[in-house]
Image (cartoon, rainbow, N blue to C red):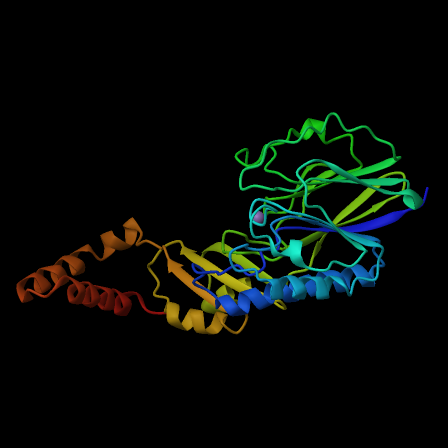
Amino acid sequence: MREFSFLHISDLHLCEPFKNNIYLDGYFLREEMWRTLQNAVMYANDKNIDFIFITGDIFNKEYFTKAHALRFIEILKNFMGEKIFIIFGNHDYVGGDNVLVDVDIPENIIVNFSNEIDEFVLQDYDLSIFMHSWTNSIERVPVIDAIKFKSKRNILLLHSGTNVDSNYMPVAVSSLNRFDYVALGHIHKPMELSKNVCYSGSLTPLSIGETGDHGGMYGVIDEKLKLQFVRLSELKYIDTELNVDGLSYEEIIETLKIEGGINILRLKLKGSKNIYINSDDLKATLSNFYKCVEILDERIYTEEFMKTHSELFAGIVNFLDKKNLDENLRREVIENAIKHLVGTK
Ligand SMILES: [Mn+2]
């Protein structure tokens, strides 16, 4: 049987407004998503991939115009493999104002506009691609068990919450296992539900909630499936904690250093607050490695520290009480006193 390869990508969310992203500018992020799609197509060409599967939530309907639809198609036209298969999800469902309906689509791009399961047969490969799209903001669960296989190899493209997010057209994973591969969209974290049923995750991460590498699933099928996650997005959110006890300033930087890519860091400092760390300095140093840095100092003073300095603190507090300072100023004086007491890193 003829071997073939595919790249499964999903949840592109093109034209997302990013109103709540505190780290990066919306325009930058939207352009980054287009760039990542270009990366995906280039990767597919480099690897001589035969098929690309795109499993829904390709765009935000509210902001995705016909001009964007043309830009989308222009990028896909660079694909040198056999065919691209596209389904729609709950964000870009077919009913209403899905602008892809009004655009000329090249012959090698197969777009599924139906919520009935459609089959596309590729005889040369003894392969059937089954597709299902959302045509409404709420979609009923398709009957998958009734599908009869004509081809030797069968792939299903679905945008479903399965058992992970059961509010979104949950399909039982048990009815998916007989396919050679099931390309799932909806969940933004890359995830293998079983060895042949996978979420590729969102192509580009959308928020600090979507940490880690993002990209797609690269698969090769001859008799068996060989599958591998590939990173395609330069953008990466890192949400991490660091216990700084016993670490020098240099060691903290060394631990958090990162090379390459566009990285966004949210760092929670943990441990004891006995040592003063200037978070503005730390942020400035880390900005050499990250496009954006947020530092949350969650360290606390240890009991031992409080005990050792209790008399002194009591003295300071007593003194400030007499001065009748406002709360913010009072806190500032105490923080400064502590800073001088414990020394700096
Ligand atoms: Mn999505």
